[in-house]
Length: 236
Image (cartoon, rainbow, N blue to C red; front, top):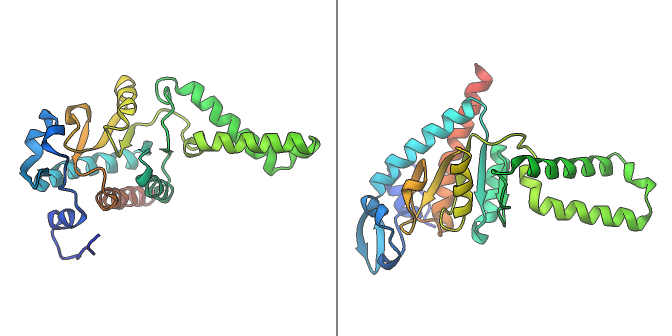
């Protein structure tokens, strides 16, 4: 990724990060037509002026949500995005889902919450030494159970109720997440590449959802707003 110059306009920074590269025209969703500028070398080119406008709308909503102490759940299950998703979510103190979305996370939230609470209870017992009364084999089995649960629920431990909003980094791969969010009326912020229907998203961000540099740029912009929102709440 080309190093970003602080004096560049945001559109220039987006171009340097590769936000404008979409998919081939054969994969183009017709609802994305207003956000596509042209086709170059067999690839749809996203209009970054429109990306800048839609991103700003999303950022304002996120800042408002966080300033009201609302919860934003981050979903990044694409392999190349997992690490940056985890780093971003932990730095911003947000709940997150990696690897695989468990069906019913939103639509059957109480069941998921019980599993999360069970994980937290096991971890607390282990930390406080309450497992020492069990045999070594039983302790090993419990430790393995904890690790298995962490793979599924580690990122959800801070989520005590349905989130006010959800950030989906790949709307195509995680279509089920969007479906559950719409069913539960959870606001969706999503990166929409040229193969996605933007009308399924409350706050669509037209951009390349495959390139690490593209997604990192968007997460960095969101992080700035979240930090600002949290600073406001602490000074008020």
